[in-house]
Length: 335
Ligand code: CUA
Image (spheres, rainbow, N blue to C red):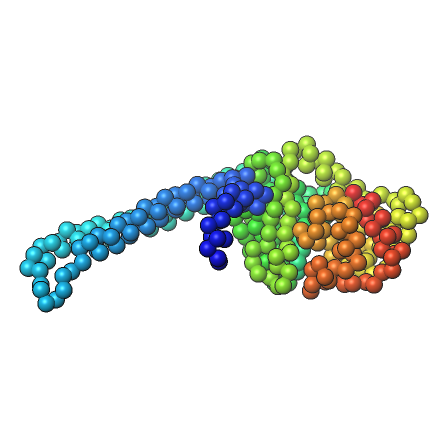
C-alpha cells in the first residue's frame, strides 16, 4: 500500500461503522464479541507496550565490547532476570485470562438465545453464488421462500439452519453475529438475536469461486409488526399481469427458459435451482447484492448476466428488445 493511502486509513475507518461492520453491536452475539474484542485489545496493547519498553531497556543497557569486560555486569543483570521471570508469569496469566474470557463469551452468547415459541426457524442453503432462504413453520403451507434477503424482527431469536449445495460457504452478518460455515452434506446452525432496527449487509466469508465477492445478503431488522406484514406479503402468490406487455412478459417467463430454474408462486414457473422470483421486486438488490434493485439494473442483469457476474449459472438467453421489455415489465409487478 502506498504511504498516502496508509495515511488516509484513519479517515476511512469511520466508514466501517455502517451496514457491514464488526464494530457494531446490533445483535446480541456481536455485542458479546465486541466486549471480548475490547478485552483482547487492551491486554495485547499492554503487552505490546511492555515489549517496546524491554526493547528500549535492552538497548540502554547493551553490553560493553568484549575487550573491556564490565566487572559489574553480573550484578547489574540480576534485576533483568527477575523482570524476565515476572514477564513469563504475566504472559502465562494473560493467555489463561484471554482463554477464560473467550470461553465465558461463548457461554454468555449461548444464554442470550432464549428458546421458545417465539423463536423463528429459517433455513438457508448456499449456492454458487446466492442464498436460498426458507422461513419454516409447523404448518409447512405457511412456509415462505425468498432469496438473498433476510427479514428479522428485532428482539426475536432466529435459529438459522445452514446448508450448502456445492462448496463451502460462510454465513456472515458482522453487525449481528460472527461467522458460521455452510458445508456440503452437513447442517450447521447459527442463532441471531437482532437488537436494533436497521438494514445490514451480510457477505459470504469463505472463498467459494470467482463470484465469491458477489455473494452478499441484504438483512432488514424491523419491528415485529412490520415483519409480520412482510411475511404476509411474501405468502401471497404473484399478482396477475395487468397490461398486454406484462402479459407477454408473464407468458415468456413462465413457459420459456426462465421457468426451468425459477419459481413464481401462482404461475406455471416452478424451477427450483435458481432464486424464487415471486416477490423479486420487493427485494433490495439483484443477483445477491450485485446490483441495486432498479428497472435499469433489471434490464442490464437479464440482458447480460454474464458480464455482471461471469461464471454464474444464469445464462445469456439472447432475448430481442421486445421480449426484454416485456419480461422487465412483468418482473416489475412482482412486488
Ligand atoms: Cu459463497 Cu464465498
